[in-house]
Image (cartoon, rainbow, N blue to C red; front, side, top):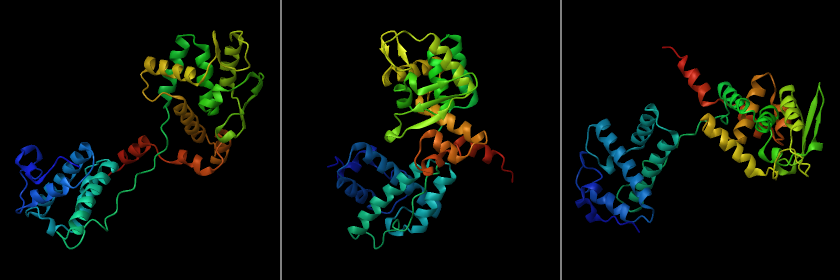
Amino acid sequence: MSNFSPQSNKNSEHNVFQGINTIPKQEELFHLFVGMLDVSPNTIQALILDIRKFAKWFTAANAEPWNIERVTSRDVIDFRDRLKSKKQAVSTINRNLTSLRKYFKWLCHNDYITANPTSSVKELKKQPLAPQGLNRSEVRKLLREVELRKDIRSKAIFSLILYTGARLSDVTFLELSDMTISDRSGTVFYRHGKGSKQRVVPLPLQARKAITQYLQSRPPVDSQRVFVGERGVLNRRGIQTIFEKYKALTGIENLHCHVLRHTFSHNFLSSAGNLVQLASLLGHESLNSTSIYTKNTIEQLGEAVDRMVY
């Protein structure tokens, strides 16, 4: 149970409606509600802030004291839309609505009000966005750092993902016999895909060059795995460590294998590729999985808004 009680309002820290014009007993009633909750202190604090925010808006918008009996669904909708106009995050707005819904449901259930004004108000839907990849300047920064350090193994790993959309498991379990490379063409056979799905992907020129250079200096390890070190094969953790190293060197905060896979997907579609082809390259069984890359990124949405003129 919560530590809150009706007596808590003697402590100014718990005086939720301090500075807000209210009719009598609004504070006591709210603390009675909070005292019935069996949730974490953080949840209590968030709920207090949300209800206070709404009460403060209510008194300003309607020019009348805070009174639970005077709250209408129109008030809740207008409050939601006001938060939206202030560009608050959808998750924050929906959390505010959830807090209001909990409070007014309790009030209605205990006959403090006759109808719940939140029952017909819908939460906002989150704008679906494409997975975040690296932009061209970040890719250039990464590959340049690799070149400066003459790290041909990392260049081969990064190139393989950037040019074929490989997963971490694809790279980890790739064997020498899975690759066919010549001067004019090349393919890579990913046999350990998600859901045991196998696929053959073309190897573009830049990937072939990077991999060929690495294979020429590959340590003589007794293993068919492509990526090895002096002590043996590179496991998943070993490859992740390489990403962490270059994350620190480049300052690219979201640098990991799947981000490079996203980068490949965005680049492929922007280079006149189509969704069916991309699904085949990525090893997706359903186009629904691939269609996420057709959605806007937050940067694209921002650019579109910036072009607006009134």
